Amino acid sequence: MSQPDTSDTKKKAWIQAMEKNLGIVTQTAKSLGIHRSTYYDWRSKDEDFAKRCDDVQEIALDFVEGKLLKRIQDEDTTSILFYLKTKGKHRGYVERTEIQTTETPALEWA
Image 1 (cartoon, rainbow, N blue to C red):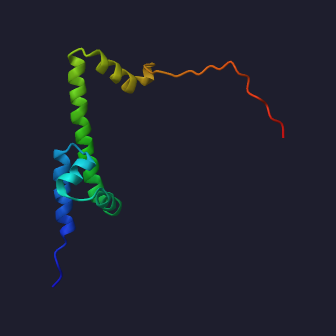
Image 2 (cartoon, rainbow, N blue to C red):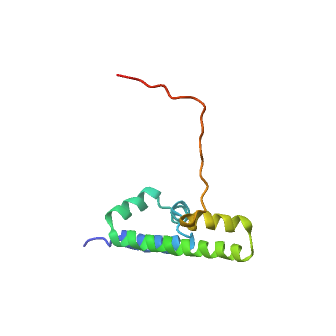
Image 3 (spheres, rainbow, N blue to C red):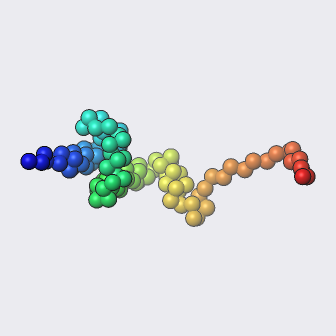
């Protein structure tokens, strides 16, 4: 008789733990006693598992974006600026670093 495949059971447990840990791989691994490398191995070999993990990460991102929007509604200036710098780039809300030098670059001729 063949032994049951425990990897599917462990993958299901991983997804549930990942939801509780908002998609953070290290916390999920620690909570289950599974090494991070096992997670990456599963992702590379199992498309369905990878998709389910990506879905959890998107849900976590939605949750955090909701928190950011709440801070914006509370008129938190830092949150407002962060949002504009990340989501409003196409409208010019970017910081640019300009480097000016007084040195003239040397020209080398071969």
